[in-house]
Length: 480
Image 1 (tube, rainbow, N blue to C red):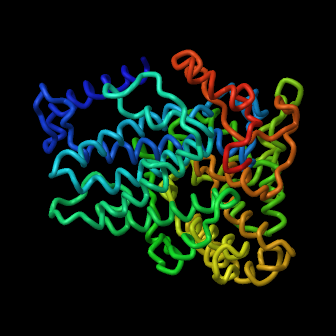
Image 2: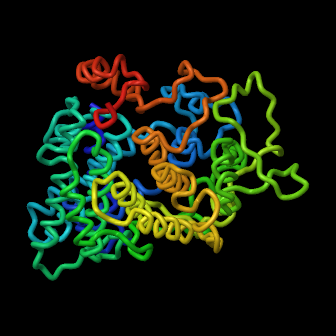
């Protein structure tokens, strides 16, 4: 019922909002609330998903990826993933926004004046569905987003089909680009807070997403020819000025959510020992951007804490550990909601070149990615960073580790991406958590939430059976 109630509630909400003086360009017919302008929905989908997943990335994703550690009684950090606390249940974020986005798709395909929205909406569907299935594996998909026209108890689609079937990730990326290329109308794309209506930028976004997802399934499928073709064409996000991002502000209401919560919640998250070790090994100045020296330090030092402590058995003083930097609270104007970036794309291509999947200069792509990641995170790149020490390409004897570790560093707060890439590649090396509630194993998927068991029991039971009882240790398809 939850699926039906949500859609009906959304229509009612949008119908009411369309009557207010603040939305002059919205259809104001109270008898036709489902005719809400797609520009409003597009803006809503992009902002809501980006804002909520950035928050989730900080309070839950960063714990799984060992960028941060939680101090107080955080069962999630100890890998009891069925016990979300400040975050850790992104499921409703995906389904709320995927259903809203489906309304845009339906409008764009059935109302001629809305045709410009079809390409971006298909690309957004691929983007959100990709993160969803990469976290959970098999999920409700083909029957899940149609609201009153579909079922309230959708079946679970296989992850392989969500990637490869019609209306899947790759299909929607291709159809999205085709729809943009075919659009001949004069009506501009509005509500686009990623690219300000630039349709060619959406094509670059789609191609960067295709690079990412081809690499994600590269251990299951031969992706070489497709990747080489995209690389040769060069029409992907390759410069930071082309990034698919939107900026948070320094003050409410559009500042990063951690800046708006009480200080106790913010201070619950400190530098992890894993990240401290990586930064020390690289002599990386981004440590001072992401974190601040611990309060009891006499000389501006940083100190990390191992993940997954048992706060009931371990006495921890906040002043002994490094809290998150001012970028995440005092001034979030330099912080972005990150959908896709040049540095991420170049690191994926560097990996592909290093593994022989494409013919390209892996070192050059790596070094460009590092430079862009420093720029993205507002940190000056030391002159010798890429020529001496463990960040210099080839100096460690493991080029893949260097590429993937640099991508992991830059993915801080990026919606579970660091953990997902660790699951795929094993880099960087994670430390065992201190007081594991998962038999010492690092999870390799998110569990289906309890509301699925209650509201969609038959389909949930089938999916749970396929994952060894909804186990967080059951690998997703591309990782099997």
